[in-house]
Image 1 (tube, rainbow, N blue to C red):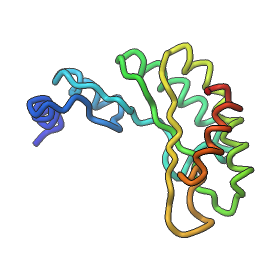
Image 2: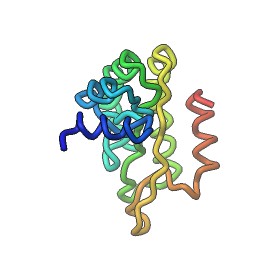
Image 3: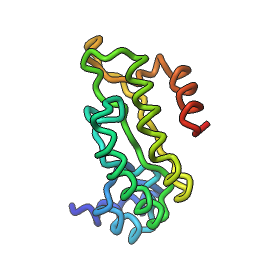
Image 4: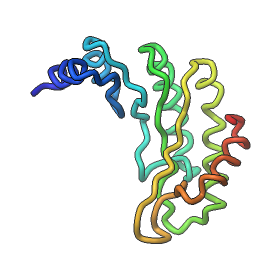
Length: 148
């Protein structure tokens, strides 16, 4: 089954949205009368905003991707904090705040919500920043970014 056929079958079954798609898949979704409520961003679970050395790359890629999401009429784009690799929660969250501040304006202008995935990887301190049990702290960070 092709992706276009898959989208057609989803629509036939009453499914309204297919998630985590990139720009190359959006035309098939739209052709089937579906939406993509959560578009893929240009980062990855292991390559995110918690590393300052990723900020220039991610900011440039999101500055391109966010208007593309908006132009196709989709509401959200996902992003990730990144693997901690020994970094403290406090440092990782602070780095995320500083990086995400760089794309807030373009997201607001484009009317696209940037959704920071609160993922958890098993395995202790080498896991991901943004663990669900830290949701309250993540909400505080959203306020610091200017997104609350």
